[in-house]
Length: 196
Image 1 (cartoon, rainbow, N blue to C red):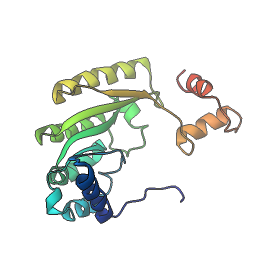
Image 2: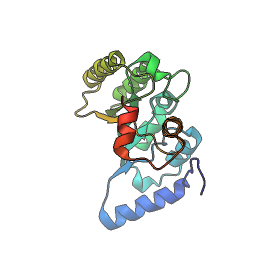
Image 3: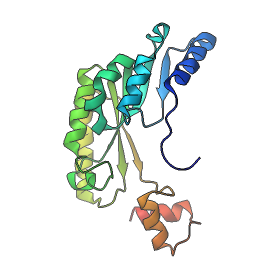
């Protein structure tokens, strides 16, 4: 397999859920794919091919904020009860460096999350520190935005992590250039370089 996103056949997913329901009595699926809202056609097919005896299954999914408006009805039909949303930052300037499209912004995130809340879907916002262009001021804006989202969503938890420059990502190429083109790097050296 090479890079890219691979979409599982929806009927295959339902067969797997059916087996888990029959054997173990599950009624809740946690989908870590991070791509559920990326392909509306695929999501619609997933909803439309669900066997009627699995309509009670509740879903906890990862969602990208910019795709929530296009998919909110499908998420409700799927019986999504919780969404982990990649907020990334609360700063307008840093948001433009996130590579989620030119329109990605805290306002877009706020709108998507508001739609989830109105639909009765619980939200866990997730932030990334160490994004390109981040400053103490932008980190403060992100902190304030996190507080606003907790008030909006009633979230019991939020996630925050430092950026990890994975191989193949633009951040990885920046790091490789700094270290002379090598890809044999110590984790602590990566953190020190990226977060300074």
